[in-house]
Image (cartoon, rainbow, N blue to C red; front, side):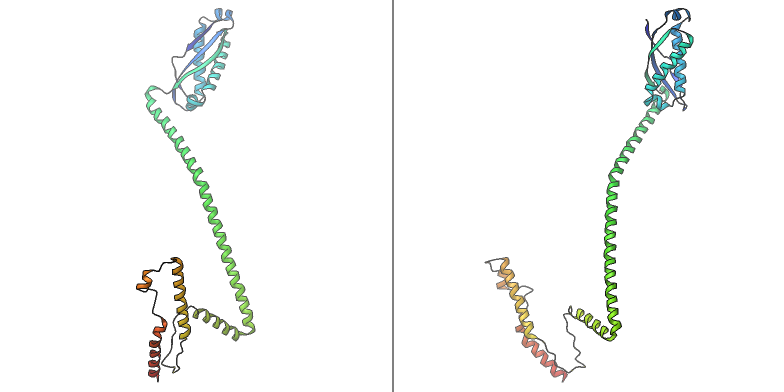
Length: 281
């Protein structure tokens, strides 16, 4: 048995997508029939080289450059071994191909720099693609969560507004039913309720002195008692905040909110009322 190898020297080949690449490979073979090896061919080793050249150009010619350079090397080696063996069997060389090893595949030296740039651009593309997918995986769940929250808030707002509108409509229907029974009474009642609600928040009293000669009565006793009670409550709250300590401000000078006692202002108010009463008369 003879076990030798051969290296392909002329390695420039054209791919299916019209790119030129250099392919270096080795063919390992052994003798399977010495009679055929010695007598059927003048130079069986050269027959192996020629069969290898023919097979590799055919296989690379129907393959794309990226397939030959990257993912298709193992398949190309297997196809080369089968193709070379078929050619050698047709010549009856008595040789059996044991293996084919693709050693190196690269573009020609004249375009190596441009090819490296293209490879780098492809790597950058894959990197940017991965970054984009990572960003999408990060932002999409948050966007979906925000959208779901906004939808829930909108649904809650819709339910709240609908409930308020239904309540107002029900109240209006009830008022209308009462109004249909007694229009004037319902109007007066609504007017009184409205004015009561307004006057509860009013702190001023307006008197028309030009058209009225009646004496205005002010509940001074109630006002004095109310102010005194509020002052006592404020003092108790201040004492609770600082137990056992009397604030110097409370002794030396009154606070801005501590107004003069209504009892002290009562004579002036009464004199003002008497003067206004004399003026009206």
